[in-house]
Length: 385
Image (cartoon, rainbow, N blue to C red; front, top):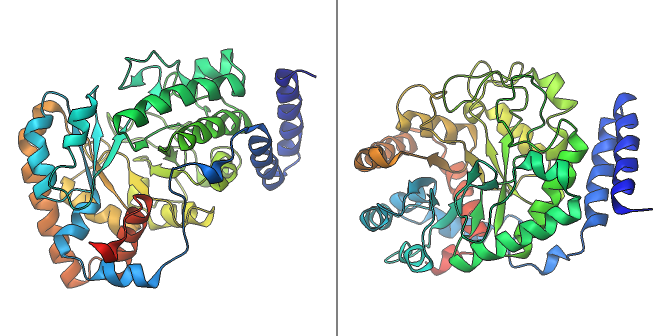
């Protein structure tokens, strides 16, 4: 039997299980199917994998200066035309990460670590289709096109080539793949979702994750708990998804089946009825707890951009609320035109966070544990800093 016909048969079997109500069994079969498809032993890859909680490391982290702890939990956008001006800001505020918004050469990427005791995470949005920052080594098709025209194995080969290229430049993290399940006629993310079938999403996303880890890049799946049913794009305004009971039958299945591959996760800015209490998911302790319960205890969890129109109030308030909810990293994707305001954003975040740590608004132990996850992902020994 051909590989494609085998996949169709597998999809049919899982679909029958889902119809009969066996969501948990289906999730198990998806994970097993991904594992069987993989030809790479991920235990030998260079991408860091989660490790047990380390009391010694945590004790060392708790002794770090407060500005170091806060900085590790912030990521900002960098552009090729502004990188030289932004590098001193990244270093002076000890920021934990940057996201590259367009192509930057290897030497410029390396310069971002200058004068940094802890090198920043170097992230990109390299999904393919309309969201691809680096194109010099070729154009990646969109997720939708990939699932429509390629087998999962063919997609794996394509993702491996691109991930090796990114890694050779110094990229360490990729905010991809999208694991949202298409379920709204309005399609809030055109072309960016693999399929309306959870098991097809899991199959292709799983190969993407394995390809990136084989190249030494940490993948970040998004947008938990699922934007496939959202009534709009959160970049442009508030949006609401289907209620949690519905998401459990569809949107959350890929997260359950992909947990064993140890990706990191981005939480969405959408409101989820019966889960987030009318707030964006990034501010919901219940949403973050649900994610962790699926096997993501050691994952680094990111906000979607705090500059999105779906997020009201100041960026500093948004960051504090996200950290209170249990999210690890506050992502700020400012435009090039807003670069002049970035120093003000960071100063306000630091001032608010320092006060919140002192008055108990932010739990010091939980804050340190969050930084422990971030440093573990970077393979940084806090006791050697």
